[in-house]
Amino acid sequence: MMNAIDEQFFKREKMTEEEFKYYFNLIKKCQDISDSKFKVNDNGKCEILELHLKKINEELIDLTGTVYNGNENRCINGNIHVRPKHIIVEMNVERLMVTENKKYSTLDSFKIKDDGIIRNSFYNCEEYAKEEIKEKLR
Picture 1 (spheres, rainbow, N blue to C red):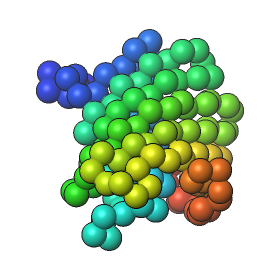
Picture 2: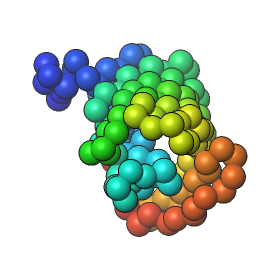
Picture 3: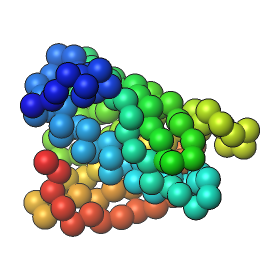
Picture 4: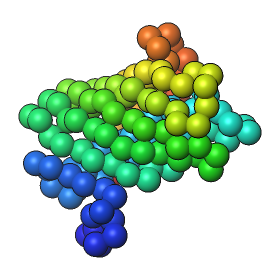
């Protein structure tokens, strides 16, 4: 259960708390959050500071938020597309404290398997990384 402080920074609309936690954990596994291509001082891992998820329908979730990697803040917004055994997270990212690669887009495709997930990651429509993650989404 979320406490009052969490509810100020993590909001959900038209979804259960369990669904929110599932998609929150999924977003944490996106390439730009877990190990961004665009780094400051070799730190690519970001923490989610704020996240608002709104379920539009069973196949589409709107997302907005802020992430921080210890050196800079980034604003994120986009959509989560939900299909059976396949979830796509597309985000537009704006880096607030730099001039190079200030705005870019990412797409992470997650294929859900019984023993984990396979993530394909793209930056500005170019494939960046493919990774098999041997853990289940919770």
